[in-house]
Length: 339
Image 1 (cartoon, rainbow, N blue to C red):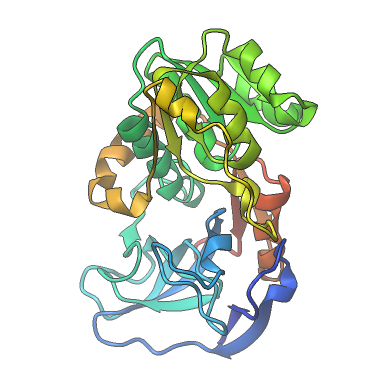
Image 2 (cartoon, rainbow, N blue to C red):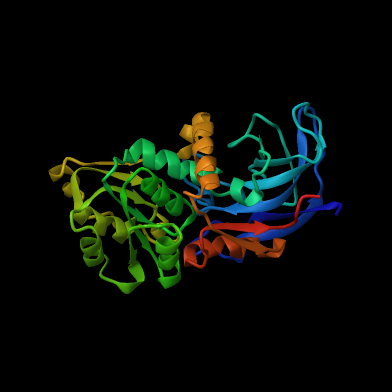
């Protein structure tokens, strides 16, 4: 291929995103400058926060500009290198964007450029030991501070981050209750991930289900959903509990602001803490997480699942799968195997 296909942001979303928010174009492969590398993207990572990057408002990263390549994490192969630390043929993880080829400068950008270690697959690098796993690791352990014997409640528990956070809590000796949607996801959490109890929010009465599965209340709530789920959980927190705000996917495609929980005073009466975080703040310590995560994967203590779609033309609709609940585990899209 001597052309570079790209998906550009065409218009900012209103409500649920779709292919109409993007334009598919073909351009020349970019030239490589000094201390730069040209990469060919092989796998794309899809994350709920990408919807937030499309909105023109202040955040921890600048919004994707109209006409700009959509931002995305990728695993790629180096096809040309003007940088002494990288050789042609090496596999790397970076923020390559929705395009076939990208020129990147190692040491710069949101995540930099990281070589994929020997024995680590692209699927692993973009899920359990990548940003997804690192997010679960630091969010749960640094903010949630679970202690052996604690009850840990996790929303979005069958998702990429929630499933890792749930299993880390189990590894730390906690009783873990997951919230997920549908029997297949709930079955995976109990039979494969080994959670103690699972709530299917699609069955309704979330408040009652939390009460039944957390009869002694919960000590840590790792929240990926927000909205009504967060409000229901706050009815069942124990004294000195910790709420970790990792995400709020229930509201990302809402056309109007979702009302906040009406029961925040429960945090006061129970002397509890609720805190949000951005994983970029912890990236200088990423190797701490990667070493533990990889060790748990190798020992079989940490299971993970990936949902791999294919085809460059399917990229926008693959992102949409995150918000419709179609994905099972980490959502990826594969373009090609390494050459």
